[in-house]
Amino acid sequence: MVRSLLTFMSIPALKDNYIWLIIHAPSRHCLIVDPGDAFPVLVALKKEQLNPIGILLTHHHRDHVGGVENLLKNYSIPVFGPAQEKIACVTNPLWRHHERILFETMQIDFQILSISGHTHGHIAYYGHGAVFCGDTLFTGGCGRIFEGTIPEMYAALNVLAALPDLTKIYCGHEYTIENLKFALMVEPKNMALQQRMQETINLRAANHSTVPSTLVLEKATNPFLRCHTTAVKEAAQTYCGRHLLTPMAVFGILREWKNIL
Image (cartoon, rainbow, N blue to C red; front, side):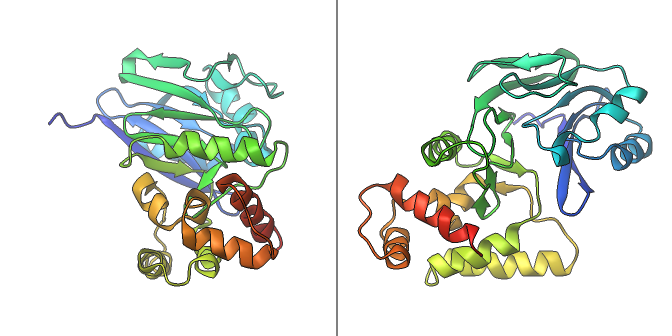
């Protein structure tokens, strides 16, 4: 098996954001994903002696794009982002689902996934066993629906759920404990979920990140990816007091339930 030359480094930022560096070890080139703040990125680049060759944006929210302007004052590099959103700094708009972007010096080939719902044009970057999914799929949960619709968000999560089970989930926030608290309200008897909560508590107590996760773990413990299961359906029906005919209807009730907590 050929060892990957890529590593993925998290940079904690703002209150609970993660900015991601995708690093090609031999060249010391890197890509910056969703830089909501420039300062910690500049510190990390200097410390690790990295040369950024591009910025990847998943959506337009300030906590994901706020550092781009200052980064561009230091580095003249392209900025990739969703064409359907107004992000002034984007130089390379990405239009199509399954569009590909290549970075030859880093031997990177990413596929663009359209995952609207959290925002109108939200995208993800998939490749090399990882998906950078911004605020759509979280560890243990999913993003709020600010600009899209329930059907759009449900479809977006299904796009991500269709990826290989061992895909690593690189999301934009450290929300795992709070998400799993809700998940346990939905599925209190889920043994895998109970175990994950304890492991997550231990990680955070030691000041470790809980991101990335894996898709197979999300499918076993994240209620928003389990709307087809009997336990999650029954919990949603109990909450809303009516029969729910489809997994998408279950998803809509779960998102409504989570919103009020």
